[in-house]
Image (cartoon, rainbow over all chains, first blue to last red; front, side, top):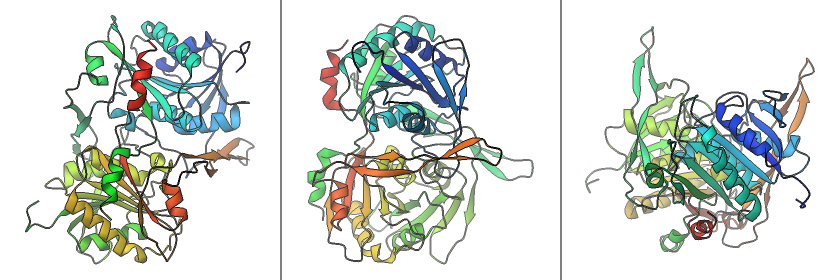
Length: 255
Length: 255
């Protein structure tokens, strides 16, 4: 990117292209650069890093509101959206990919289930600086407007400083009107304890709904969960080299 | 697990419960412990860590071959299978979860797209020692029999020694009849370069098939790709704390 060029920004999400969270993100990005949106045509929450190998993908231009962005609605997963954007839609590699703002938390272990973060990771894999944004409020009518300045500040820093190869950012906003600041964190060691809701259909055949309770047993004060509970914005640098390097030496003695 | 108790082993995969790869894995596990299979009723390749939040799950007892295992066929993703097994089907936490043997590679960056590895990671999140096995042969008729002794050796080591909290193993077998040995590796820094196959339907509407070419630019001799290319079995210890800890200090100076 030369100095007189506006950055090219790819925007996506996992709640679908009409979700209020992505509309806020698009609005802020329009102030910063040239924006192309390639986002799912339907909700894709919990889709993790799924990609579509066994079905066709459609990707169509749409015009959802009055902003300067160019938009495409895609039938695939968030990771598919990034792949198709980079390979079929954009003329050059974008300077940044932002995903979200997700309706609901992607802190702690939620990062592995999250379509929002998988889109950011996919961009990272393709060598594009990337950020996933999430708000700890599942409501469709959540207050995204109050996030605008924070989003702008974080994005401008990433555009200015860049991100190291292999790292993307996972940003979560607390559900509060009085954010205390930003904390750089590690991912809390927490998990979901499932509570399957077992039912019978009208013919008596059993089926399940997946539900669960989030349990955080990590008492560390350097975690995203701790920062969010104290009304701070959490930023976790996330990598997709999953190697547990510290265990290689030990494992070498096994065989 | 007490000494006179046989280990309880959960088996799953992403190619579906009838795939030859999982049938081999079940056969070997029956020699080692009490086996319960909870696996997808249809292929789930590329599903990553997707979970089913927007649809019901079915899970039904099935009897596919003559082994001692108990089996359930599940309508969900690999991660769903592990969740439903642990929470609804098994009487106690299993001593081990094995996933695979996948028809095709899950080395390098494939770990993030892999349903096979996501099942293993899901078990790891729930505190269960877990291993994903994959063979670098996509054929339905691949020779899985020659893997049996290697699988047994690796599984017995994990049962004896245990795995640290937060780590699961990603085991890939080269496509060869002459395996040279086992190498403990790091995940190679590689990626897929997509090549979308753009077509038009009979009504002239455009659609895409996702295809791609695997590109490994990582010349390291300590990677899984390098080991596999030399006909070694690769074992990568994989973690699901995605925090890039080394970048936290630098990032702290940004805000």
